[in-house]
Structure formats: structure tokens, C-alpha cells
Length: 253
Image 1 (cartoon, rainbow, N blue to C red):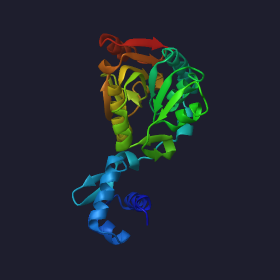
Image 2 (cartoon, rainbow, N blue to C red):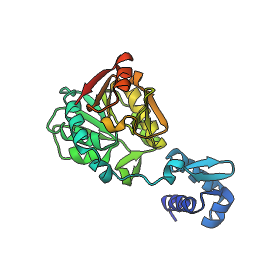
Image 3 (cartoon, helix red, strand yellow):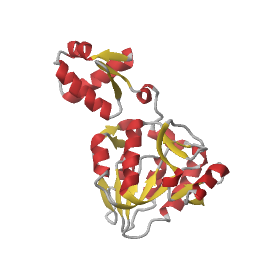
Image 4 (cartoon, rainbow, N blue to C red):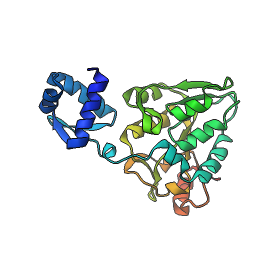
């Protein structure tokens, strides 16, 4: 049994039982406890489970069914399209641009086709948009594939982002709280987003009005860290004012 098959069985077991000890998993999979501990460490870093004393439990995020990329793309499609058009207009020729995961950033990528720019991403949908475009210099970062949401995640991806130096990052999120917190609902993505923010000179948050307040309990950053917010006309005006007060520019698509 390969390590990837073994780890898949560990996650499957936790989905059924909720939690398991190292000893129990070792006996079930007929491997040593040290092998199981290494597997649990990898799965914990990837956000697929939570290490506990003597074992592991299913990550709260993993326990909740996640909407697929295709289903997300259909939600608020007009708003996302408007945001993407205004966001893409911020990109100048020869810029180095980081595109976050998400459906809005895929639409931004589509509008960068034929431009002499460098695009860095862990978004497989962005990769598909630009893979055959010879004008764009495309850099795809490695990591663990999240097939349901067409992204690459984990410690390898986070480490790669920390080696990047970019002009702009287009950041996505699942919510913008009234207190100015930009949030997400997946721990494994949140760490990548924080690394992206540190990698770029300017941070552009792309969030249509449905993200106010949206969902999510994991803080990515505050609006004070956002240089430009691109949204739509129905976004909460008080939250937009918080962004302006913190020195950010607000663009209504």
C-alpha cells in the first residue's frame, strides 16, 4: 500500500468514526505506529485532520461538505464578472501577479490572456485558462491537489508562496466581517492566503456584495492590510468605510 493510499484510508476511517488513536490506525492498516504518526503529521499540515493526544480527529472544515468549484462559479456570476473586469484593469504590462484560488480569480485570468504579464498561482482553473497562452509567463506552484476546488494546498504550496515577490496579489475570501476582518472557511487555504499577502507589494481583495458578511471563521487579515477592494454596489457601506478609513481604495464594479 502506498503512502497516499494509506492516508486516504486514514481520512476515510475518520469520516466514519470521527476520531481514532495511533494504535488503532496502526493495527487496522498493519503498519508501525511511527508510520501512522508521520502520516497524521502530513494530513494535519494539509488541513485534512486535527492531531490530538495519541491520535487524530477529523478537521471541522473537512467534516462539512464543501461546495464544488462548478457550483460556486454559478453563484452570483454577474457580480463576479463585473468584479473581475474592474480588477483586471488594475494590471499593467510586465507586472508580476499572484492569483488566489476561486472563481473570480479565474475570470481575472481570462481577461489577462494575451498580456505580457507574469501570473503566479496555485489555482488549477487559472492554469487551465492560461496554459496555452504564449504571451503570459505562467508559474504554477506545487502542493496537494484539492480536486473539489481545483487548487493546490499544503505546506509545499505555502513555502513556495514565501519565495515569491510580486507586484499585485488578487485575494479571494469567503467573507468580510463588519469589524473589518477578512475571513475564510478553510484552514489549509487561509495559510496560503497569508503567505500571498506577504509576497506582494499591493493586495487587491476581490469580493462581490455576497461576501458581506459572507461566511467563515478563520481570519485571513484585516481590511487595514488591503490596498484595494473591488466589490459591487450592494456591499455593506459601513464595512467599505472601514476599508477607506484604513487607507484602502474601494472600487465599485
